[in-house]
Length: 148
Image 1 (cartoon, rainbow, N blue to C red):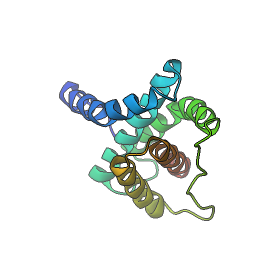
Image 2: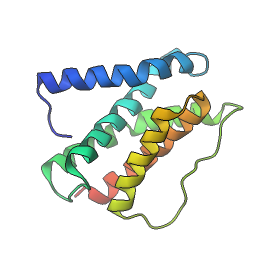
Image 3: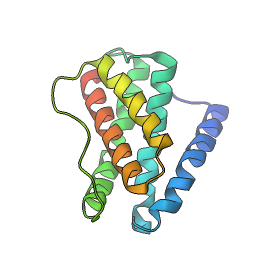
Image 4: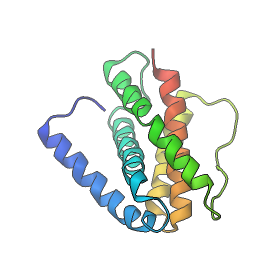
């Protein structure tokens, strides 16, 4: 996750659309239209974070690319809060699957990748929404540990 050139942004935009558009169709039945941008932001930031992890492995504290990743994650906290509040008001809402405890950078990195893969494979909207919110929680923890 570094500053992207025009071609990289086009590839990212296409990937976000490919992943997000089917999710958006499901979300339209539940998430207010005014919050669709917040949901899209969470998905986009998650895709960028997973791309960073796949390209670079575990983030290194203080590295420029890692700091950019952290700032991108921090920019999505308001969207995360909005969608979390909406999700928790749904009668089908499910509790977080994350456990409390001590998380290392390596464990967070692998759990982000694993949970994102589950998000991609899931077809049930409520479960997909729960998974993307949990992945974003993991990203916030990762950013908190890496940011300096």
